[in-house]
Amino acid sequence: MNATDLTGVTALLFDTYGTVVDWRSSVADEGRRLAREKNLPEIDWDAFADAWRAGYFPAMDRIRRGEQPWTTNDTLQRNRLDEIVEEFGLGDIGTGLTDEDKDEFNRVWHRLNPWPDSVAGLSRLKSKFTIGTLSNGSFFLLANMARHSGLPWDCILSADNFHHYKPDPEVYLGAVELFGGRAEKVMMVAAHNYDLKHARSFGMKTAFVARPTEYGPDQKTDLQAEERWDVITDSIENLADALGMDK
Image (tube, rainbow, N blue to C red; front, side, top):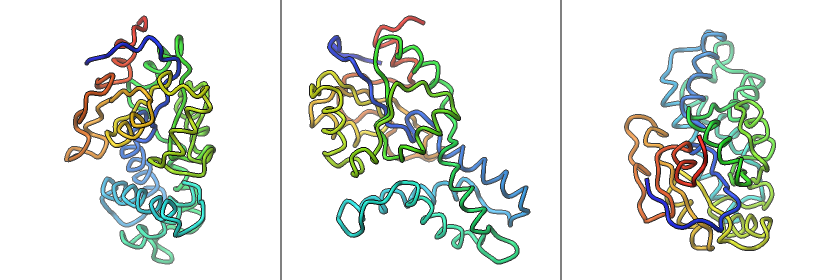
């Protein structure tokens, strides 16, 4: 764990998927529960979660390139679910998922569970800093997730606020503007090097929280910090330690 001089920082903004919550296990576990309830064909639910997530960035890129108008993350995820239900053989009439089932299953992204260190670490940080999200998730999703998982945010900033998805400049610059326009007072916290690279390019401070199992045991990316971020650590609890928070 390392930290530079961050005495001027007043706000911490967190990437959420993968950094604060364990999306992969949450989605796979809910899929297994749904399979038991609906007597669905046996599939690899970890692979299903990976396939669902794999559609996330291509869908956002289509909006970023202007190929389709602004669309919320909830709708993008629901559209992707229609595709992978067919890919995994769960769309057969009478034995697969109905549209109503898929609508409810899509809301699993509102019910993602936090990593074990998240709630305690955020609660400690909240005693000194304003803490909030800076996520590509929808505002509605992030609010529901906070309630479900007990995430003690002071504020929720989402792609919905800016009608842009990270890493578009409008997201980072918009967040800085909302916090008074002084980028050096705002820290981006993420488990993804690309997110921090863009945040730093707009003057924000940066903290890398390693989540080497976000994509499961065979994760290939973001296993470690790729640059000298202002803080490099492996949990939000340890981020609180690095920033001088009491236990």
